[in-house]
Amino acid sequence: MDLGVAGQAFLIVGGTAGIGLESARALAADGARVAVLGRDEERARAAATAIAAESGTRAVAVVGDVATDQEEVDRLVAEAVEHIGPLAGLAVTSGSNRDAHSTLEDATDDIWDRSFQEQLMGTVRSVKAVLPALRASGHGTIVTMAAYSIHAPHHTRMPYVAFKSSVATFTKNVAKTYGAEGVRANCVCPGAVETDHLSALRRELAEERGVPEAGVIERLMRDEWHMDVALGRPGRPEEVGELVAFLLSRRAGYLTGALINIDGGTDF
Image (cartoon, rainbow, N blue to C red; front, side, top):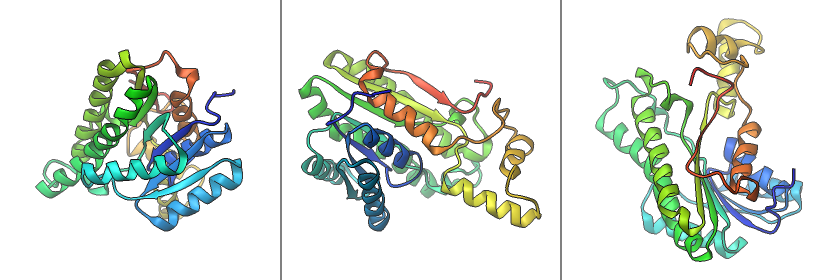
């Protein structure tokens, strides 16, 4: 499908790996210019170089941290615009701090504070930074990332679920507030996706338990995480990235304010 994004510019926060990288790849494959934003300079530059080589379109690295303050995020967005031109859309796909997956008893004030900055405020600042230009142009798209677990809260993910739920509500509010100005905003809720972290866990568990890598995560999901997934497997980053690219494109022109599960088929 032609997404209709050729020649347009998109910023992908967290675009240096996993879902974000695959989102940028899907957009670039259809001719979009992309900026991938991440904290690690080497990884960001490698991602941008690979995307440009694969697609033949312009891809640039922007290095920084959206979990800092608004002035820094404004600077990062301005840098992206300088390199790829006025933005047609933004996706915030950055991951979480591992401590966010804590119980209430284990989650210290510091963990709550860091989770607030990384899960929620990084998204808020990024959206706030791009909104003036999107509103002025009369069109633009925003995609944020929540999680399947906001529908199935779990005691071992207290901060993570709390702030991912806030991302979903925030996105709906953006869609309602700025829709009349041509700005669309949608929130994606992935289930278990085999990014680098889950792939590493697959290898570790296979070695630890003395079993083949094939099937070990699938059994863990079913027997220990109690995830009733219809497809019986974790998702692949490119499957979520293609959804993000579609939501950012003109093909999703009447879709806004939506909370979209991509979780392999769960109870919610």
